[in-house]
Amino acid sequence: MKCQNLLLFALFTIFVLQAQANGDAEDYKQWKHDFAKTFKELFKTNHCNKCQSLMWDHFKNPGQCATAFNLGCDIYEVIKDSDKGPKPYDLTFFKKGLNKYYHEDFHCSQQKDEKIYNKIQNVCKHELSVKFDRCDDPKNFKDITAYAAYGILLIFTLEFLAEKLFVYEFVEKLIKWMKKKTNADPKAIISHDLKFVIKGDGKKIRIPRSFVCDPCWRKMANIYVDCMKEYNLKKSVKKNIWGSHQVLEVLYLPHCTHHKRGLVEILKARDSKLNEHSANPAFSV
Image (cartoon, rainbow, N blue to C red; front, side, top):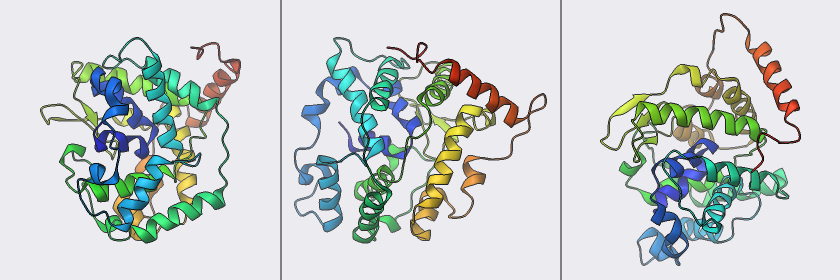
């Protein structure tokens, strides 16, 4: 399995759907065998530096603090246990993996998490100084080590605290829109700034503003922004990841105008719906 595809799990929950959207069934059947068995194989080098060695240790033993990585692994486990391969834009395995993830025990203190990502920042200082164009196709990112460094750092600074119903509802809406706009292009992906869908031929389609105004998105984004404020990431690293270290709200929670109902009323309605589904009948698998 390609390193880029693996690291997409680290960048946000939404990127998990990209494997569903553009993955080849054979990739899932062979992913365990294709995944690099040594750090030399993963980073295509005979002499790994300290940053590469540290990342390899986390890849092999992610632990419970690696929330995004573990969610991705749960989805792959569901796929491997199935007698059917995944189909483009079919969220069946994403739904089952998400359900599996939310039923697992979770033990990771903020102190332990901080210790991990602070070490990553210190050991991978050079790699985290490399800048990427977040709206570009990830396949164009040539510096795999630097890309991996950002990915492994975000693995330990993401907390999936939002209710799974909100996560799934938003992903389902976006994937349906993506399928329609790309004519079910199996190679389409989402840019890391969440602004574009990039088709297999390189054409970019801007994601409508309505998605960042969606109540499910805003509930998840609020949690994400609050988490990022709590983490003591270096300002230079924040700027390289998001383009700014001060205006996460502007990036992920832009002002939205609702003509008929305010956002508070919409969220109350969604919360009521969530309470009605507390027994998970609509999310059962």
